[in-house]
Image 1 (spheres, helix red, strand yellow):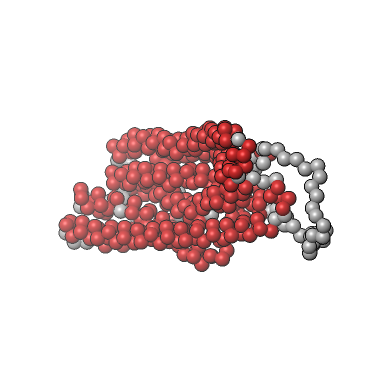
Image 2 (cartoon, rainbow, N blue to C red):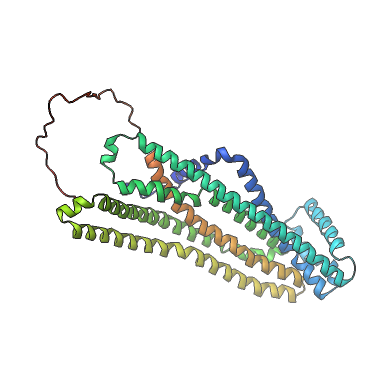
Length: 396
């Protein structure tokens, strides 16, 4: 077991694909889940683009037609002309809808539009959450049944070398830990990745000059998450093994309580359980220290980028190179993108823990079953007696 603590990235990829293979019978619901998740991420991005129109309605009627020549020049450096023309036509249609009538009518129309947008977004969020739970539990049900059926087909020699508590832990605890990597993890990856891409697109479209300041922090963030994930995977596997040791001691003590009391080994069993319990405590605390570094580290990098952009963006506004409403949208998008990035970093931790559990589950599923039974002899009845010779017992 200890020799398999280090798992290569290539092996992790194969392991994750094997877990995803259990989604095949549910591909229709999986597609529906992806549609709901994609639309949710898209509507989240649309809500960001409503910030400049809202500010223009409140503070200046003249700004309803303002896009800023400098901003348009920045966009032309990154966006093809055909795409830019299409975006301009969409913006013109949106302006004709929002900016029609008196200021109070515009504000009322904007509020109704925003309410409808949020209503649809929350409906999509509800369906995506329910589909995620349904698919997760259905797949865990299938894996747990497959694992239990496999245990029924293994030879007696396998059980002679295994602790009962370890096997129970794999069927119950390890299978439960898989839910973070199969459906929930995949859906969360898609949702948060799309939200990140949409936010980054809005950021670059608003001002590519400000956007370039944030790119410098990306390699540092990726390197940090990679280092943490490697340590977390190893720590998670060790914690699960220590939990299995405790479960095994507990099961053996309770089921064999008569033997324990007959040999007077109560104090020995208590000492053995305390040792495993303390080992689990140390391993788990060490793993959690590493895991909790990912989220605050990503958040601090995001805050550093935000402060840098706040200074430089304010300078662009003062120099009339960027509209104030567009700067506000840029800042909100920058703060908004921190959340999906944090979720992705946390999700990586969850997936690493689930892969460690998946490896333990598949170790059982990949054991060859007992196929050769030709050497067995069936005794219809005992003709004389049974004699035990050179048989001894000891307490372990």
